[in-house]
Amino acid sequence: MPDFSVKVRDRDIIISKPSAGFQVTYRKASRSPRLVAIDSMRDDPDPEKLKFLVRAWKAAFEKAKALGWLN
View 1 (cartoon, helix red, strand yellow):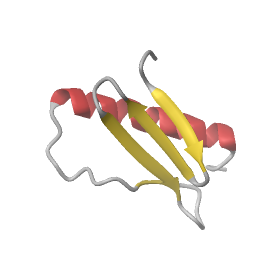
View 2 (cartoon, helix red, strand yellow):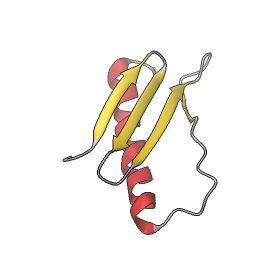
View 3 (cartoon, one colour):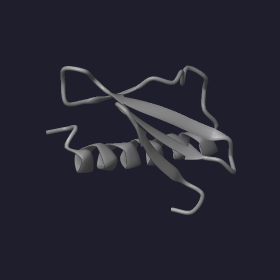
View 4 (cartoon, helix red, strand yellow):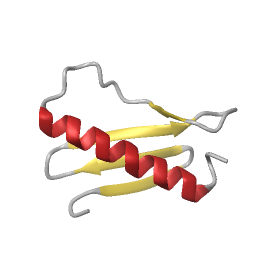
């Protein structure tokens, strides 16, 4: 995925697309095997941002599984 970054920092998975200025952070819930978006996404996203959010969720989910966070 060109121009798409996945980084892990402590309990966070940070997904970004610098060329569009998009970033979302997912955090591992402390006592359960799930991810929680910690960035505010209350605005009504345009189609480009919505596409990014879908791809970001999939990337974060796959990374969390690979790290054993969702077992």
